[in-house]
Length: 313
Image: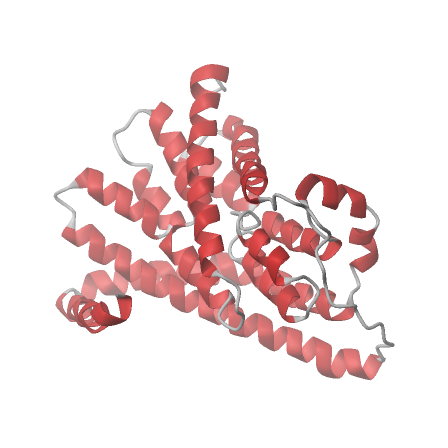
C-alpha cells in the first residue's frame, strides 16, 4: 500500500518544498539544530562506547553477576539486560540499536530481541527532566512523577509481552579470545567509530525530513488547531510536544497526553528504529505493538497520578 502511494507522497513533498521555501528552510534548520546540538553530542559517544563494549565483552561480568534478577524480573539474559539499560539511560533509538547489534553478534536470540523491542525503547532521562518538565512545564516537581510514569509503563508492557512459558533464551555460545592491542586500536575502535557516525548521520536525515513534514502539516491544518496539535505530537516528540504544550487544554489532560506521546516516540522515532533494524530480520511490528501499549499505559498511569494521587503541580 505504501509503495503504491509513495510516488504521490513524494510529489506532494517536493511541491511543498518548492511552494513554501522560507517555511521549509526554517523547519529544516530547526531539525538540524536539534540533531547537531542535542543528538550528536549526547548519543554519538554512547554509540561508539556501546559498540566497543559489545565487541570486547567488557561489560559481561557486570551484567552476569545479577543474572537471576534479570531472569526473574524481566525474563532477560545479561546481554538483554544491557540493551534495556542502554535503552533507559541513553534514550531513543539506542534501545533498538543495541538490541539489533546484540542480535547480529549472536549475543541474544531472535525471541529475546523481539521481546526487547516491545519495551526497551525509552526517551532519555535528560530529555524528560530538562526538556519536558523544566523546558515545557517549568515545574521541577514533575521530574520524579514523570520518571515513575514512563519507566513504570515500560515495566507494565514487559509483563504484557513476557513469554507465557519462560525458558532461558538460547544464545550462541560466545567464543572467548585474546584481544591484542593492535586488534583493539586497529579494528574494534575504528569499526565502532564508523558505525557510530553512520548511525548518527542516518538519525540526522530522519529528523530533517520529519521536521519539514511537521511544517507541512502545520500549514495544512493551521485552521484546525485540535487536529494540528495531535498531528504535531504524533510526528516528532521534541518539536511536537513543544507545539502540543501550547494547546489551550486543562493540565489534567495535557500532561498525561504529552507523556503518552513521549512514550510512543512519534513517527520520526519509529522511522529511526526501522532504520536500526534494517540489516536484521527482527519484526518491526514488535516495536509498534510495544509503543501502542506504552501510549495507553502511560496516559492511564499519568491521569491516575493527577486525579487520584494528586501529585504536586
